[in-house]
Length: 208
Image (cartoon, rainbow, N blue to C red; front, side, top):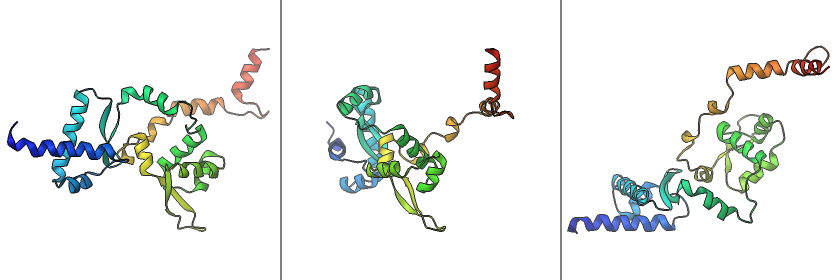
């Protein structure tokens, strides 16, 4: 072993130890401070450690999420991990909670009333659940009348989805139907003077 390699090896081992005990992503600036290294050197060590985990096909990877680094399970092993974590538990979010969380993620900052208007139902209870689980948090108040509380997603939300920032959310356009689909839906839901949808009337006529 070359003498000048020793500091790098020790720094790499120290980096692994810190990330192993961290319960949330550790920012590069904090790692640099603790390890007494330049931030650039920390980024290099993290890149090398991440590459080594992949090359050795470990059960975990080094991921950059929520602005920091953390160890997390390898994506291809998610099925095994999910069965272990959810065995005998019912901790999954309901469809209503997931829909509301998506609205907050893409429309933040947003008030309860605004989220309710988008979903078409009262979301106060769902919002409280999401806040208790740490996925959303209060981010301010609406300057308008009433000064309603405004909510946004939290760092826990980014960790949960494995995102480094909100900019990594998939574009909303990917989930919006194209104009031809919208047009087809509009045609299918047209109402005549008798109060029957056009397509419904056609189907009834065809069965006579």
